[in-house]
Length: 635
Image 1 (tube, rainbow, N blue to C red):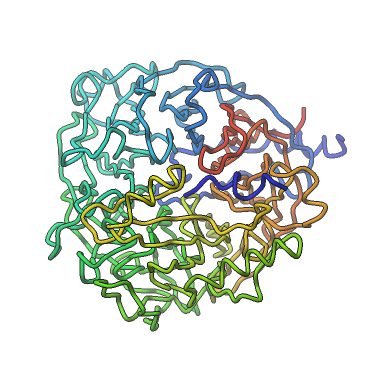
Image 2: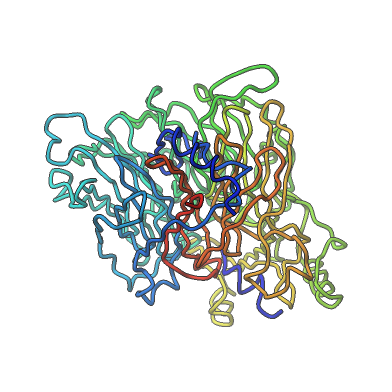
């Protein structure tokens, strides 16, 4: 990921009162117990008080400030948190991993816990906390801390907090904390950490890690760790590269994990082995890397795996939580895992076997690789849905606001390799399209089981990736110290990655640059897609010139039983509501800062709230802030 905004922009009223009262009188309270709504990450709520007919009456009900704006380091932070609601309290995790318990109806703070991160450490993926996990013990010895909030910190701690008081649970680890071993010598502080929430199943808490990519071949291992949720005792660990016929690291799990209690499985979305853009020292398909891996939650043994990218040299990690659902496709019904990818593909796998439920084809891909590289001759493509992000671009497609802008894009593109999907990195420079931010990213997707419909947002931009021969690397780094130029130490090449933009800061690929899609899983066809976001907060008045372009986006959607899809994510400061049947935008609520997070919703004491973290994102360079904003229908 790059600093999107700096390259993307710069140079350049009470008519339903009776219905509302009735809704409050008869609406049952609903919770949001998990980061993804449920353990399978469906991001769906049975709440029905807010409807397409009254959504336009939404207004701010309350706000809560985490206090992060007092830190100068906020410029290096992302507020990607999705709160959870459990036992009558909202639990929020700030950019700097502080956990707050809030009153769901007022936002009033009940307690706050600060793990005291060392803010002098440089975390390449920014200070971040996507969420926390809730667990209630059933054993008698848990009486002193029966309900727990598990926090995984950027500095590799797993902390158990009493959900009632916010105090560390003394019987877990050492006074409530486990310092997780990174598994090797650190290249630098902050090289590895936790950014996504843990998952708890069968009394076992499981956590993956985030890495500083492209630093070296022999990277730290991407080990997934599991601990007893009661005591913190180690239960098992899983390294996706154990047994691989080469020496490398990573293949970590930085995206959220899903769990199926009934099957006793957790589902791990893994990344590529190190380094991302050259695989000549790790020949082969790297079986458990770039894959969905189903693991027994009690033993850590692999139940099955399915690889979505063979021999990944494009940084096409699995970025999103695997979504567990029951799908009817072409008349056949099965429990499945739905996995979105950065390439804009959606794989639908049988949850018991890992075999494709919607068929997958192996298709030939470009093979003109760098010296020493050996690519997979084919890559897997699901037959449905179709790719949700464009992947082929020609010189005539170059975009520019003015003629000289377009001419500059065309000239830049003419000097780069571009052979469509999976064009390999090169010393000439290669266009990666979609870019490594997606397609689909960590926001994942939402699934409406009543209609068998998937809602998912995608981004569209181009990266250029250039391999730098080792003898030239030091000079290249000195010449452009502020560019993303990484060593890939131990490999014959370093690398440089850029967003391909025009002199006026616009993406060189044509809009829309962000879309929200609805997919009917009965046959995999797209019901609708609409642009997501405007350039309003990137360049004033630009939306009047460019029209409805959409923007690159980070965060995901949620759906409700009343027929609404809520999403922020775009690079303007709004939370939006769309009609789930048509894709029509019905409402937008102004936010005090960027909403690069996934919202959640709940009903508390008869009133439905929609909550979003509005704090912006360092890598997107959207407006920074520290507020949780709650919307509800007017009084």
